[in-house]
Image (cartoon, rainbow, N blue to C red; front, side, top):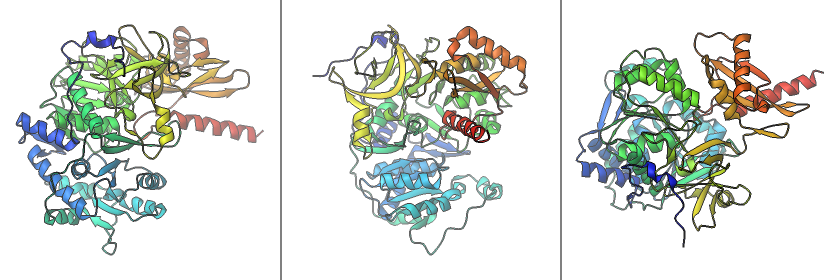
Length: 578
């Protein structure tokens, strides 16, 4: 009999329930049942570039698109790769596939040909949904796939209101090639929908709560990218947990859905949580600093979710000269939010009449996304908050999985209804990541280091594999970055280890300064002096390189491995030139 894990954080829940009831069925049913109960069928489910779609229309579209996929040969349990930006076709297809018991595999539309081939082969996808701008790349990728795959080509202009739908083609620099008429495996979205309208009605058979509902891919920062199987219960539990722990009712709220559909945060919170709660998704297909202020002013979202990059952009964007009192919640996840960046964002919000603070969350794609969140009314500097309802955290010794005392550093492990089914076709990695502890519970091993205090507040330290070892001493890059980011002229930074003949490795920092600030020896010295005062001498950067920007991964995190590779290449060239 499994023991109930310790939960010292519950005293900070207030009116938030410690335990929730979760839907027994599919993601589609969780949304539809709740919307009917709330009598919100005529409310707006999502808005795209000013075009509004009600829940009633949304469910009608799901039926037609579900029939269209059936007509294209997609059966229960089949996988379809969805290679789309944030557009109605991507969202509609996600739920239409769930409606017919098929499995969407969400990938980035900017993925390289080799990556697309890998995703299709890994999932054995029977079809790919892709936006017209990238369908030729998909056709090239399919040359590396050994089974037949249908390609459904969608067009952004089809979902735009008049007159934008007429003007949109004029704004596209690289025009997509015409859809070939002689390839029966390439289907234009218009023809696809026409087939769906003519097809027989769908049955009422629905997938069960423990069936795989979606496949997302790990970022691959510690090795080969892995397909993560998430169930209907995983997704529905997340939606219920985030809504319950938000600190305000999500019903009727306007969610700024700018995080991408292939990202657990964007899909799980930015879309599914909002729709499950009867809110409205403001679907943003592409985020840019130039359009950020314009879109926030135009759509007045009540809730914004994003990675730290989004909040850095908040500080850099021009045009935020208006009142932000309409904001009810602002959540940050996907990467560590430094104490200093949080301070800057909170100051910005206060200056613009918002009554909220940015709240940091933490999670992994292996539990969909957020599993821990800063409480609505309590903040502890450096903490990622406390676990959500029905989620348990344990800090364990990585060597033997035994739980460590409060305050001691170890691996962060998570237990609860959002923990994944497993890695697709990878029993070995699944067994390594999902482990049954001595308490009888199944725990997700995150590969992240952290601590928990006596009140249950969790503190993320670093990926277990992202360490800089200087003279045998562990240095956590996030601590270095936090110290650097405290400088008022610094926007963001990234610390890596570079080889050193004496200390084995030393710290090098890449720094992006705030707009209008020029690099100087004075700023460099101030940064180093601040580091000397706030972190171990082993963590003080040996070198600082100023840059206009830092490379980002597909999900918006700083691509520190790319910086490491650049430095390794420099060292190799230097040695060869001797």
